[in-house]
Image (cartoon, rainbow, N blue to C red; front, side):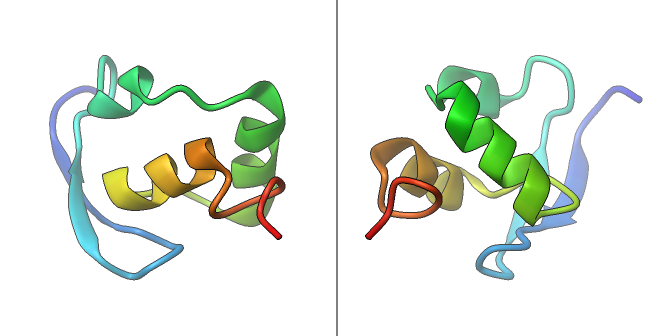
Length: 64
C-alpha cells in the first residue's frame, strides 16, 4: 500500500498522516530495541511527537 493515510496514534490518540513508504518516520532515529518495543506494544504507527519521545527515551523501554 502506498500513499498518505490518516491514522490515530495508539500512544496518545492524536490523528496524524502516515506517508507509508518513505514516510517522515524514517528520519526519526529509533534503536532496534525501541522499534521492538513499539512493535510489541502497538498494532500500528505512532505520531511524530510520540515517535520522537521514544527516540529520546521519554517513552518506551528507555523511559523511567
